[in-house]
Length: 312
Image 1 (cartoon, rainbow, N blue to C red):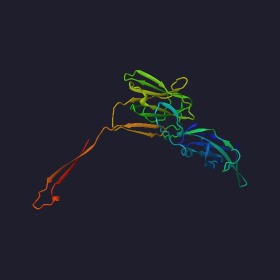
Image 2: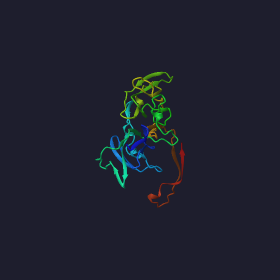
Image 3: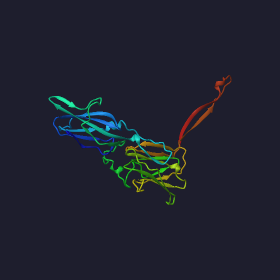
Image 4: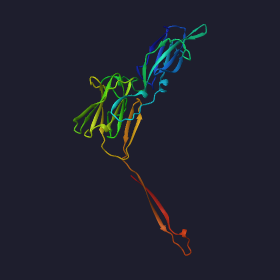
């Protein structure tokens, strides 16, 4: 075969970083390569490439922009503590690859625009592109999030100790390579374990899932709880621990915000108003002197001076 894949993206790749397949031709007659990009089983784009600058037989295909067009985010409505698929935050991708050869000034390829041609010259393996943007100073892979050990990280930039009100919810996105379940360990104010509850196991459809946490379902004698993931059959811990301290303070002006973090997960924080501001005005007035023969509109007070003052 004239074409071969000499470099591929990681099986789980960040869609907002270069996602590159490198194709190498073993013949000098290959002058161009065409790749059809399939997203979740449907062809979404066709890309043609000339050889890499400085070479005659190496062709690079970066398909990150195609993936980005079919990714959004999973902002969940949470009414239970459970694991669910993150179907909007990942896509399953592969390439159908076609050679373009030249002989006597004539170009020949099996690729056709209407997809009625013969089979492709080469088919890539599958990868999963997720809604993540790795910063340039970070390690440019997702291995830290997809290892199966207690060092496995959730897709969050939040601290490992958070505060949460009893009426609030939280979601933690994570990468998966098997069947998982969540465990919530609840402790009282003396750090004594009071409860240990597991969710129903989830075998994700693809590689990305969400740990949904509803704090309202946790008993009122619990001062804080720790959330982890574990193997659904062996109970071996397969994630880092995230601790949630209950905030019992009541504040009528609390504002909870949720946002998509750079790793593609959802982070949240409750902003509590600690300050009130007032603006007070005082005025000095005098009463008009009314002479004989006055009209009704001549009576009343006149403002001499107004002073405004802010109060915290």
